[in-house]
Length: 133
Figure 1 (tube, one colour):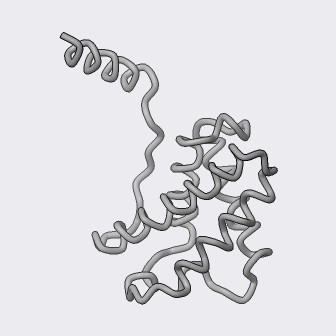
Figure 2 (cartoon, rainbow, N blue to C red):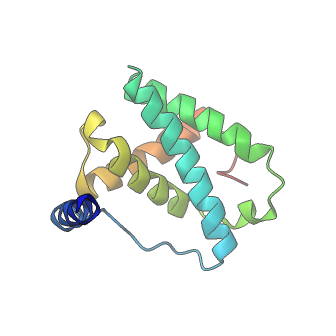
Figure 3 (cartoon, rainbow, N blue to C red):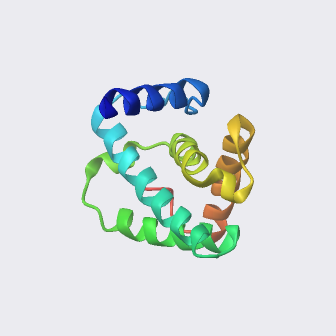
């Protein structure tokens, strides 16, 4: 009884509040998996920083530096195939779905704003590096 009630509740929430999704241009599944790991890592760091009271700029810079350090030392050869715009869009989707309301961003406009904001701050934070290359 509880399982069916929980299932119906979950289904109704998902139908009433669908998740934002966009198609990614990467065709290689291993590139997509790596991109998912990078986006999840960044999102976790960014949202935790926001929840701990850091400003959006501080949280963004901190998450970029920590995520880039992990990527830089990765030996995964697939990282060279990740397109910066695709990764920025993927990260934006994750962030907006996880903690977008905390920073006042929702929907497609929030995703678009966060994507351009991410790329702008990334260029300022790590000007010598190409995103995940």
